[in-house]
Image 1 (tube, rainbow, N blue to C red):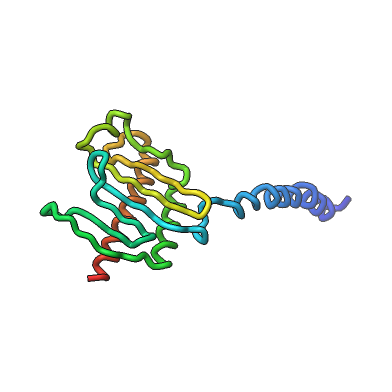
Image 2: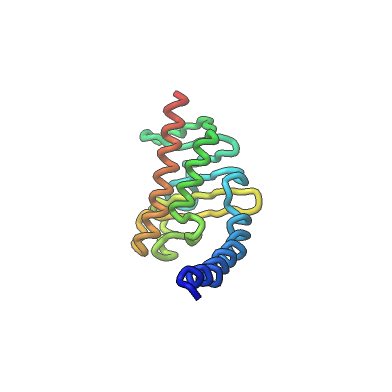
Length: 167
């Protein structure tokens, strides 16, 4: 057998089956991913101390409530654009939001402490939703903390930008 024939045989017997296997195995996973942007319904974001989170945003209704520096409740209506939704969904994908545990805190005592600041982020899709409760005092896995912290900051910045546009 010539050198060229050996290379062709190697490619046909190793590389081609590997590519076919990969396509058959991973295509359904990618196609049926539960958190696809096209199935996005709403984003719920709330923050505060204790069990009752006074500050909140719901993208389905556009309702945005928060306490200002004077402890006055400010209520407004902010709608996210399609571009904003795509951006936040892509940030969630990049940061691995879907793989985070539902609670990112040091222990149960932190969750029960009424003085601890906490954020709750919930992405709702047609068939599934993902909710994560995050306490900034978390001192565990740095990658996990960086991912949820980045997600929280991006949502906050998007809401601030939208509110400033509305003014």
